[in-house]
Amino acid sequence: MSGRKSCIKWWSLLLALLLGCTSPAPEIHRLQGNTMGTYYLIQWRGHTPPKIAVRIDSILREINMAVSTYIDSSIISQVNATEDSAYILPTHSPKARARSYHFMRNVQLADSIYRLSRGAFDPTVLPAVEFWGFGKRKSPPDTDTLPDTIRRCLGMHRIALRGDTVVKALPCVQLDFSAIAKGYAVDVLASWLQSKGIQHFLVDIGGEVRAQGFRKDDQPWIIGIQNPHTQELSTLPALRLQLFNRAVATSGNYRNFHLRHGKKIVHTIDPRTGYPIATDILSASIVHPSCAVADALATACMVMGSAQALAWIDTLHTTEACLITSTAKGDTLLLTQGFTTLLLR
Image 1 (tube, helix red, strand yellow):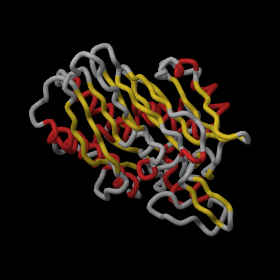
Image 2 (image 1 turned 45 degrees about the horizontal axis):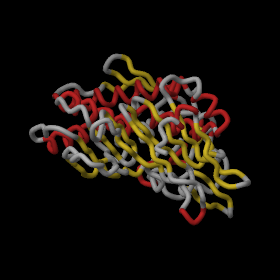
Image 3 (image 1 turned 180 degrees about the vertical axis):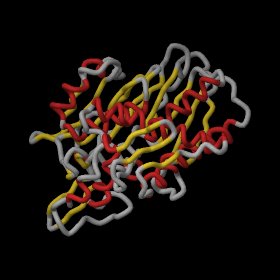
Image 4 (image 1 turned 60 degrees about the vertical axis):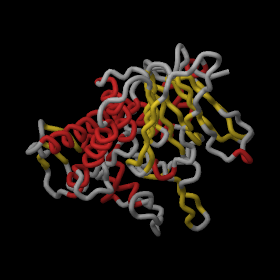
């Protein structure tokens, strides 16, 4: 599992709007900006809530102040930096309570996927991500061996919530929610739009997308999934999905790597071992009602490899997958049966 997906999402989901037929298309409102090191784009039908831009930016700012490892004053940065076994979450103001809530929800969601994936998804992988040069440190180490001092810091079972207190088994335990936070933010914005009476919308943060209702009468929102290779390197067709009240998130592992003594070190880190792992999956796209869950499941699939990932996804309710894999014969598409029903022919 890697922690800086937003910076390398060359394979990100591309929004593709269908043009109208004979009847006039309803007006689509748009709002866009920057967040979490990437873009956000919101489109909706119907009325426009007062001060929507201010409110959206405020929500995204509070989420960032909860889970961004690039903000030193964020809650996650303070939790990661503390040498104490317990960190009491701030509740002294409405903003502090909002940030603490977002942090706790990310912990709870991450822990559920950690258990569901048997450790293939694990946000405590951050020390290993940093060691292999895919975090703030941008260069690979001079060794192929992960120190035991880092390995013993990994594992979501080493951190827990006790009321408003974060308890760490060891001071070196650190969290990184970059493989779930964008999807989480998409879900939060979707809930806010619904609370304002908007039932037809699409929310996209850096390629993590959730669609609700219809773009126009009886026609769902359409998004595209780009092949992780350039067009010159692959003959796989572009995929277009019809999304109705569902989300889709993608994780990839093709261009973000280091070369050390001619050996490729990929950015996907297996949190169960702490070592980089290069499976046959180039990218994994997951469809699920929750964008946060889809985001985390996609990362877990990258760690598992295609055979295990497809078998696992088939056991999960309301979940579909599209895996682009690399084989000796070239790139291959592996789809769950339900995913094929979402494809636009």
